[in-house]
Amino acid sequence: MGWFKRIKEGIRTPTTEKKETPEGLWYKCPKCSAVIPQEDFTEKFCVCDCGYHDKIDSATYFKILFDDNKFKELDANLTSGDPLNFTDTKKYVDRIKTTQKNTNLKDAVRTAVGKVDKQNLVIACMDFNFIGGSMGSVVGEKIARAIDYSIKNKIPFLMISKSGGARMMEAAFSLMQMAKTSAKLTLLAKAKIPYISLLTDPTTGGVTASYAMLGDINIAEPGALIAFAGPRVVKETIGKELPKGFQTSEFVLEHGFLDFIVSRDELKEKISFTLKYFNN
Amino acid sequence: MPVYLDFEEPIQILEEQLEEHLKLQDEKGVDTSKIIKEIQKKIKDTRKELYSNLTPWQRVQVSRHPERPYTLAYIKHITDGNFIELHGDRTVKDDKAMVGGFGMIEGHSVMLIGQQKGINTKMRQYRNFGMPNPEGYRKALRLMKLAEKFNKPVICFVDTPGAFPGLEAEERGQGEAIARNLFEMAQLQVPIIVVIIGEGASGGALGIGVGDKVFMMENTWYSVISPESCSSILWRSWDFKEQAAAALKLTSTDMLENKLVDGIIKEPVGGAHAAPKEAFDLVKKEILKHLPKLVEMDKDKLVEKRINKFCSMGVVVEK
Ligand SMILES: [Zn+2]
Image (tube, rainbow over all chains, first blue to last red; front, side):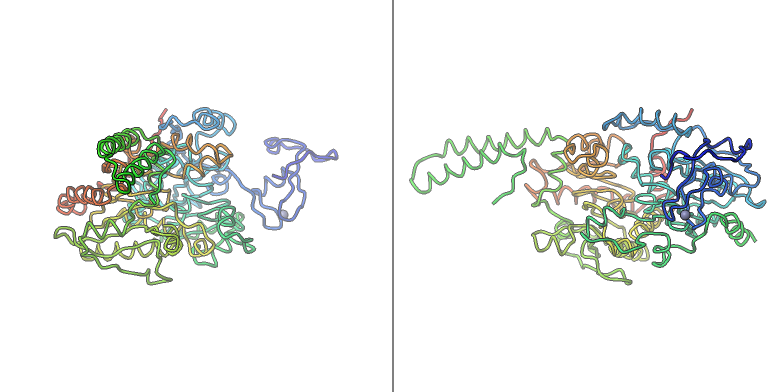
């Protein structure tokens, strides 16, 4: 990330809202190298003037989408078990505890229901900060329950994916979340409730190979990495440099797997229009 | 020349001894029958001993044994040769790493599908080492839908080191292809029996693995990642594959214990490759045990039960 200490003293007056971000920080865009005060960047939902979309968390997506940032969170208290008693260089339970403490999140997805331009919507949004947005039992279960909620209350479902794939520390349990979420989506489909899948940077592995690709419409933010196998693995497989733009949203759109690309500043408008279309 | 896995060294030594004694008897007329019998017994005992105490990593090794039978061998024996292979996904091409077609098992018409590995160096390449491209998954789905149309059960044999991570695979939507199969298999209106006969690596395996009954053969593995890749990612070194294999709980025993599969199919002592015919018969017997019951089930119930089974997988804590 392009974080570095501010060199010169700034002259801006911090407002109460601006106090949320640490003072004295600037953002450097990895794409165009522009240097922007962090507060300004945050206010623009982390989109640079050049169009670069940096990662944002579920809280920010909820803020962007839900009217007046009002929503009811679902199953907020689900946390991970440790079914395999997994230990690599660290115990999985410790990794979870540390991550929970550092991120103030329970796991890598949050689900909520609220209104988007006065239209009901259930949103499941992944948090990349939580072990790379990896999909384990909690992610699978919360998505499954959010879909149940959609079906029960006849409310459209939006999935915002942002994930490195399955969570290795839950091994086959995490693998089966792919089957689980996909199976649940068939019930949503049978109930004829719209499912919008938004793929953001990055969406890879088991998430791409399950719910992320199963939307009635699949949409993505610009420039997101969207892949089954990550670029490093593909590069090793073919033993050649990858073509420019490989596995970006634009590439995936061009190959027929996305309906459209939507920038963050138009996200609410486009989602709202889509809902209006389906709800009419 | 037989292929020995590293832990099979004691067997190798004994078999070499046996060879020498047989030669002695043949060429020099020395009567070694008594000692030959002893060695033969020792080989049998040693094999049994070794194979009843396999570590998870050793099981992974057995699952990849180059002489292990692959999907088409199972299909051939289970259908007694009553099988017609069908090709192509009707969109891009025919994927040689995924095979399928219809066949008869003791009077039942079934659709048989599976990843196929090559039996020698040349064929391994031809079969892309059992790593399907998206068109492989789409071919599998086409065959499943064909089976559904004519109300025939589906039997899937899983044996893959993973879906192919190539450039064209990405271009043609490997992720979408697997996702689509998970979605469609969940709702397929005919019974699906899945047998893991070798490697069950991640989404590439699950892509044909959503079944009413999912069985693992004794010496196979099934998980979200291979022990080697897990070692390289979590331990940041390739040297922890044994630990990773143990940590992933990827053996048939662990998977059954965690209720992520429905049963284990025993293998002959020394693994499926030691006595393939016996292995085929054991798989056939298990399939025939479940097929009639599944066929008789009400379709809505069947699908509901399948969906509920996968939806109950996962361990969460609710505070
Ligand atoms: Zn920029």
